[in-house]
Length: 381
Image (cartoon, rainbow, N blue to C red; front, side, top):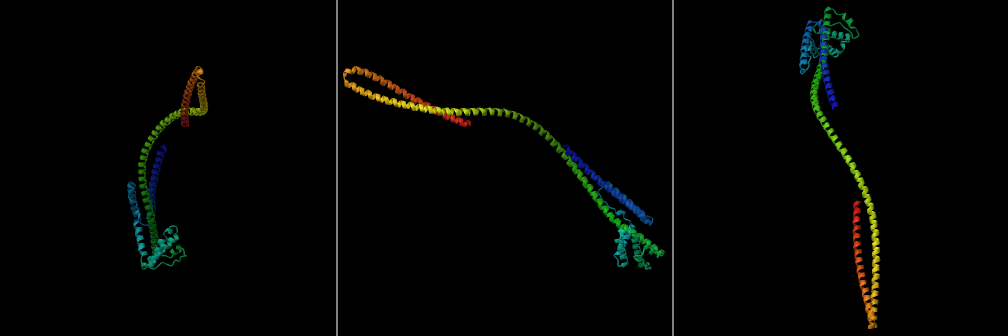
């Protein structure tokens, strides 16, 4: 959060610094323009009083324009008040003559306009252009033309051939050449300065609007950051509670895992016991089946013996009946014994039947127990 505020502050400071730089450059350009204008005015002041007076008027007008821009920073910047009226008049006359039908003026001013950027550094070229303009003036005013001056000849040598009147005419056009070229270059410079200053002013206004927008966004960002900080604090508290609950849950889970492990061990023990029990039940079932088979075999053998015994008793009874009454007492005794044997045999048969019924019930119970153990084993798995 501190980084966000620091970034917002640094952005605001950088924008304010940029705006201050634009305003400083703006005032510096105004100051340079004033100095430039004053320098040119003083350089021509000793040639003409009207030039100095127009320069003073231009300087005061410029100060008024600068104060207006400094107070409002709203009006479009302009340096039209800096124009020298005499130079403007000379420039207009030159343009009229350039558009006229006189080929001498056309050629002379055409060369002047195309060479203004060079004449201040080349005195010979400036003198040559003033010579051409003076010669055209002499011809146009009905006076005699200037003496011939070849391109290869030095202007100093050519000027020696002029009389006083011609030299005055040359000097006037020499000064006029400087004024015209200065006015042309000054106008181009003014246009550039006006465009640059207006761009700087628009940039400063745009920067100011951006600063206001940044301040609004910074306030919104500060408010949002406070809300985020509160949310983070609340989230930290909730996170601590969740961490505490998680630790409690982990401890409880450890206990549950311990119990689960014990239950798994018990389940494995029960499973092994059930397997052993099933194996024992299988062996018991086999043994019971073998015992039942033996009992059934014994019962069959006993029944056979009883049948044999009954047959023998019947035979004996027949023999006893055939022997007569002499043996009746013995026969009755024998019959009594036979009845006793029959009774004992019946009791034995009943006991054998009861034993078979008990064994059947035991087998059914064993089968039910086996089924129950199988289900329990499947469920435990």
